[in-house]
Length: 364
Image: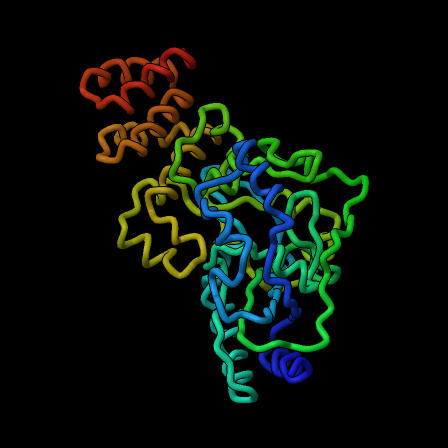
């Protein structure tokens, strides 16, 4: 069955697959609890650790897991330009979640024809520890930035897996952690907001990729670190020596769509957003989060020509948009910004009012 799966996956164009029957991750219980104590966890993680640590809680009949990795970012060059925001290369083209799911669905159907199975496909859709599952199957090992690094494809790999109710023989599991980085600390030194720690831990709430996606409040001191990021962040991967052969590869792919116009994002409607960006992986967070990030990016890039546009957002019905528009105006035009915020203070609800008062205190 294992050889059949490997042969069929090649026919389907799946670049690399692995196998594991490790279904219980109790050995990571202490590590995950420690992350929570340090406030390194985030809103995208399931709060119930048992659901993260035990595959059978998610799929009771599971006996084996087929993992797969899908490389991306070939020839990607990291670019910055004025008045534009930057989308992560993970959101290039059509949503990878759908593409990977469809590939794994085809593979599962092939397996089912060969040997009837019950299965469940996961592509960022389960509470389980995706990277740990794929690491155990031999897909790769962790880098200091917590991402899986594959010997051939580096860390620019999308992950997916199939949980199935059949035992696959002759599986070699990889429980041990291999030190791939050794003395290298380039990613640690390059992280814009010091999210990568020396002990191979990530302070998730400082990570720029997280900040571009969270709906939680972004601390004032973190906003300048976000630069022109609209969705995601690729810095720690771009600088990683393990990825140099990927980003330096020749390609005819045009990544220019990853640079987006800030003015457009600030004025875009929901309908326009869905038409233009709805096919991308990053669109799941919605127009308002992208708009918020564009408002932050405009201040970080000193786009003074957008002052009036951003000032108009102080009348937005969304408290979130008001809060970041106020910060952006104070950064772009402190003197007039102070007068504008003072004139609006008495009309605002508590959350917005407190933010205006904080900005007037800190940025005056």
